[in-house]
View 1 (cartoon, rainbow, N blue to C red):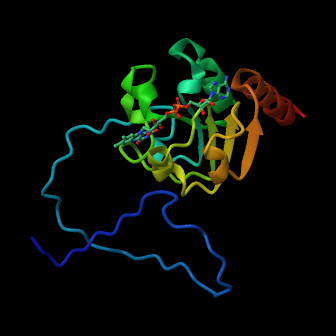
View 2 (cartoon, helix red, strand yellow):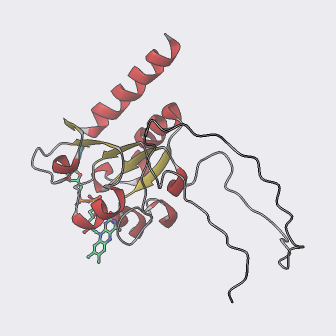
Length: 176
Ligand SMILES: Cc1cc2nc3c(=O)[nH]c(=O)nc-3n(C[C@H](O)[C@H](O)[C@H](O)COP(=O)(O)OP(=O)(O)OC[C@H]3O[C@@H](n4cnc5c(N)ncnc54)[C@H](O)[C@@H]3O)c2cc1C
C-alpha cells in the first residue's frame, strides 16, 4: 500500500565514500512520526561480531582448510583484526561452518574494506559475492588459483604457515 511516508534504508558499505569538494552542512530534522502500527516484541542481535553484510573486515576460509578442526587459523586472525569470519559454500554444505557464513552467489554478498580469503579457489560463484570488496588478499598454495586474478594482494603459500605468521605480525604491530 502506498502511503505518504517513505522510508529509505542503506546497507552498510553499499555506497563508497567519495570526495566531491562540495561544501555541505548537516541539518537536524524534527519529524513527528505517527504511532507505530507494528509492535516489536523482541529484538535479537548477534553479540560481539559484526554481521557479514555490514562487516568492514572479513577473514574467510575454504576447502583448503581441510576440516573444521583447523579453523583456529582463521578465527585467530579474525580476532586479532576484529574481523567477521566467512567461508566458501562447500565448507558450509559439509557443516564445517554455519550456513550464515557462506558468501557468494547463493550466500551473503559482502563489500568489506578488506577481504582475506585463504584456501579458496576463487570460483565465479564465490567471486560473485565478494568482488565488490575494496581490497582482496588471497592466500593459496596454487599459483594458478583463479582467485589471484581478482586479488589486490596475493600470497602463494601454505595457509597453515602464512596465516599464523600474519596473525603474529598484526599482534606485534598492535603492541609496538
Ligand atoms: C549454482 C552454484 C552456486 C554456487 N554458489 C556458491 C557460493 O555462493 N559461494 C561459494 O563459495 N561457492 C559456490 N558454488 C561452488 C563453487 O563453484 C566452488 O565449487 C566453491 O566456491 C569452491 O570452494 P573452495 O574454493 O572452498 O574449494 P576448492 O575449489 O576445493 O578450492 C580449495 C583451494 O584451496 C587451496 N588450498 C588447498 N590447500 C591449501 C593450503 N594448505 N594452503 C593454501 N591453499 C590451499 C587449493 O589450491 C584450492 O585453490 C556454487 C556452485 C554452483 C554450481
